[in-house]
Amino acid sequence: MEITVALFLWLFLLAFTCEFIDASMGMGYGTILSPVLIIMGFDPVIAVPAILLSQAFGGFTASFFHHQFNNVSFKRNSDDLKIVFVIVGFGIIAVIAAVFISVNISKTFLKTYIGILVIIMGIVLLLNRTFTFSWRKMVAIGILSSFNKAMSGGGFGPVVTGGQIISGQKPKQAVGVTTLAEAPICIVAFLTYLIVRTIKEVDVPILEMPASEFFSMLFSPQLFQWELLMALLLGSIIVAPFAAFTTKLTKNNLRYIAGTIIIVLGVWTLYKTFCI
Image (tube, rainbow, N blue to C red):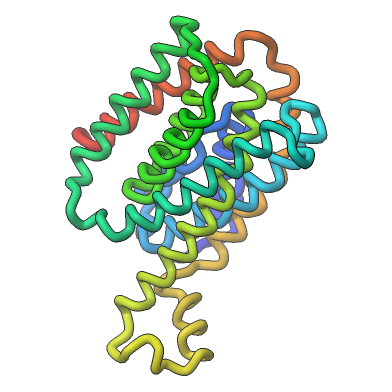
């Protein structure tokens, strides 16, 4: 799909808006952006890598400002940073595992499960129910959310943010932790996606290919569109400080805002599964 200057600006504004929601509330970038790009006519093979990489860079940038605005503490040995390491560490294992078993699971079943799970989490948040914090719960949240992400492209932010809040983490800290934790997960998913797609395209054993030819194919126009990536990158990075500052200004109603958004995303997931 050819990207004109006008379309480039629209893509920039779209990424700007989606990353603002995601970085300020801890969810929404991929869940909103992915179906919108597909509706606009972009091939999912092209759209998915751009979404993953732009979300990673936007997440790293927003995390820096979340720390600067004291929404969360990523200082060495801080509990928030430890939660990030737990979610990312077990999450990467879940991402890799999901790649191998994805062919044996119905996508419709999985998306239905994610939608229902997210809606239940949103309802629990609105009911103001909180449970005791434990590291086991953080491990479970990391595995569950990353598995969802690798299998269906969504379901990470709502599960991680909502799960942390329900488990006793403060809402602002939960948003900051989710924003940072999702970035490396997106990078792993991005690299896995490109490598797997490249392997499928070649007719010779991958280890026998010249390295220059392999990397040339890895970032070929058939799999990668630089104009789309640049538009999404600029939008997601530029909005990062504004999103983090919005989280800082948000008072005690963040839990209820997050709960409402989570329910909407859950309903949207079910709608996409059965009606689109």
